[in-house]
Image (cartoon, rainbow, N blue to C red; front, top):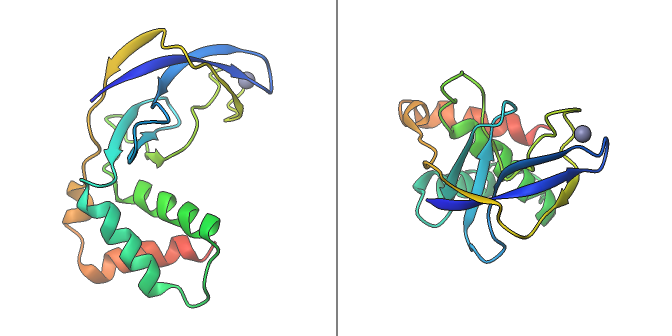
Length: 145
Ligand SMILES: [Zn+2]
């Protein structure tokens, strides 16, 4: 998938850096990032694991979570379902890029693309090899926090 590279401006230390971003109009597309800056995407409507995790969270939660908390748990669990990057780092779904200088994920995002990049979709080979019980256990751990 082709997406834009935009400029981010770290609100913590003022560093300007470039990172991949999706347009607000790219409905259902979410970026997954490693702490080291590798980026992949997920099309939430196309990726069957996204819906699978949503259903598991609905089935597992004892108390109703508010929508924000449920969405955060879903992103967290989805990141766990993704195969790690080539460097063995975990992908985190739907997070802002980390400032390369101070490691903060808070900043202003520029709107104008300064470049474009082709991203691969996340894969779920490791998740696919787990049993239903192992998958539920992973999601249950996310819900404990
Ligand atoms: Zn910074």
